[in-house]
Structure formats: structure tokens, C-alpha cells
Image 1 (cartoon, protein in one colour):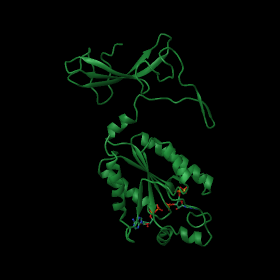
Image 2: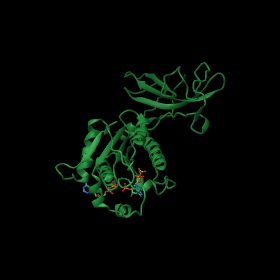
Image 3: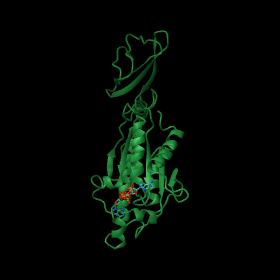
Image 4: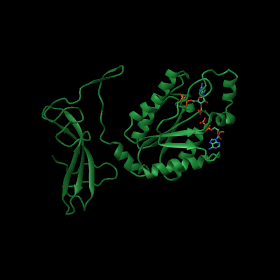
Amino acid sequence: MNAVGIKPLPGFATLRDGYLPGNAKARSVLRITAADGLQQAVRVDVNGTGNGKAKLDTLKPNGSPLGSILANGFTSNGKNQSPLSRIGNSTNIKWHECLIDKIDRQNLLNQKGCVIWITGLSGSGKSTVACHLSKILTQMGKLTYILDGDNLRHGLNSDLSFKAEDRAENIRRVGEVAKLFSDAGVICIACLISPYRRDREACRKILPNGDFIEVFMDVPLGVCESRDPKGLYKLARAGKIKGFTGIDDPYEPPANCEITLKCDNGIYASPSAMAEKVICYLEYNGYLQA
Ligand SMILES: Nc1ncnc2c1ncn2[C@@H]1O[C@H](COP(=O)(O)OS(=O)(=O)O)[C@@H](OP(=O)(O)O)[C@H]1O
Ligand SMILES: Nc1ncnc2c1ncn2[C@@H]1O[C@H](COP(=O)(O)OP(=O)(O)O)[C@@H](O)[C@H]1O
């Protein structure tokens, strides 16, 4: 294979006539054609050896080394390794890999993508903590995005009610969207009541180990009800809203979450102090660097 003069991706050196200065790295995308005519795009990483010569480091079609599975599902000997799948009601579908992956995006952002999932009763402070968290992380140069249950019900989830099946579908959709943000390298902050443990656990399961960080707003119903910023508890108590979480609909607290935010000696920490606690967790667990 001749990798001479290939156009590099942003941030990488150009390889000219096999020469690469020092220990520089070059990276590009090549399109190769196999003997049977199958075309395949592959990522090439080329490393300088320190003496001006370049060494082909990796040829990466699918996160796998040269000679194994190509991104179209065929091996170099023509065997199809990834047949078409059926996922739910989607038939004959096939995952398409890209040459740029989560690691590349995380390197650009100098952070690790993850999902901070804030659960708790209405009025427990989920949205307030989410906003403080996003603000402080932004000031630290980190990219965040908030998925707020209330807001998403204005668009993506406007077809869903508050009955258990619809809440489950709400959480499933938001879990999938959060997974995409996390894969983009973003610190995604999802704040939803998410009252059922099994729905939250299902979101945890679709993410890589450790990347689902469950935060429980451990605020008693009495406190939430006394705050009642939207007057919803009052309406629920008057029977004007049916199936309101905590009043006549269940809330299942997490059995084993990563972070619990609650009051100390009867005093609630400020929202920014609560956000700082989450940031300490992110820092300690390496999410604030690539
Ligand atoms: N029946 C009922 N039960 C609970 N909450 C209700 C209900 N009806 C409307 N609301 C308002 O909807 C917001 C919760 O939406 P979520 O998408 O987070 O709920 S869930 O996760 O699907 O349970 C919630 O917002 P937050 O106060 O931010 O939690 C309420 O304002
Ligand atoms: N840590 C806190 N201490 C005292 N009040 C708070 C705290 N966090 C939020 N609040 C207040 O509680 C109310 C509900 O907060 P909100 O973030 O809307 O809750 P949720 O998103 O869980 O419904 C708001 O009036 C907010 O100002």
C-alpha cells in the first residue's frame, strides 16, 4: 500500500514521500479496492520513527486491526462477518461504523462523555442542580448538554402521558438520546423524575460501564410539596391532576446510586454546593480529561 502524500485529517501532519518529521503522527482516510471490486474506506495512522522515516501504525476500518473484519462486514477473504439484523420492528438493518470514534471526539474536547442521570420527585431540585452543574462545567471549559424531562415533553416526547408505560417510553427515549450525547463526548445531564427503578436500570445497561452516573435528589415529599413552584402538588391534592408522582403515583428511590444529594442536619446545601459534589465525582473518576 502506498500512503505517500495522503491528505491528513485536521490536527495531523502530512506524510510526504515517506518522510515524517520527528515523532509526528499522520492520519488520513484511504479508499481501497479489493480484487473482487469491493470498495472500503480505511483509516491509516502513520507514526514518525524519529529518523525521518514513517512507519505504518494502524489501518483501522472498524476499530479492528488490518486483516480482520472490514467495515462492510466482509473479511479480507470475503466472508461476511456481520449479517443483517432485526432490532425490534426494524428488519434487515446493519450497523455502519465510522472512521472517527468516541475516543477521537473525547480527545478534541479533553473530557469523557458520560450521562449524569438526576432522579427525584417534582420540586426536589433536579433542574436547578442540572443548571448549576452545566454552568460550572462550562466555566471549566467542559461541554455539557441538559436533557430536562419537562422540556423534552414540549417536543420529542409530547405524545407521551404520565401513565406507567408512557413514563417508561419517555425514559427509554431520553436514555437513547443521552447515550448519543455521551458517545459524542459530551457530559450529558438528564433530569427527569424517572420514578421506576427498572426504567433507570435499563438506561444504565445501554451505556458503557461507569458512564451512567445516577444522582438521587433525596428530598422528602413534604419539602417538595412546600416548595411547589408550579402549584402542581396543590392541584394533585385537590384531585385536579391524577397520577401525580408522590401523591397517587409511585416513586421508587434508587437502591444503589453513585451520588445522593440530601440535607445535612435539616439544612439543604445550596444548588451550587450540590453541583460541586457531582463535579468532585467526575474529577475523581477521570471524566474531566480525555
Ligand atoms: N402526573 C404527573 N406526575 C409527575 N409530574 C408531572 C405530572 N404531570 C405533569 N408533571 C410535570 O412533568 C414533569 C415531569 O416530567 P418527566 O418527564 O420528568 O416525568 S417522568 O420521568 O416521565 O415521570 C414535572 O416536572 P419537574 O417538576 O421538573 O419534575 C411536572 O412539572
Ligand atoms: N438546594 C436547594 N435548596 C433550596 N431550594 C432549592 C434547592 N434546589 C432547588 N430549590 C428550589 O426548589 C424548587 C424546585 O426546584 P426544581 O429545580 O424546579 O425541581 P425539579 O426540577 O426537581 O422539579 C425551585 O423553586 C428551586 O428554586
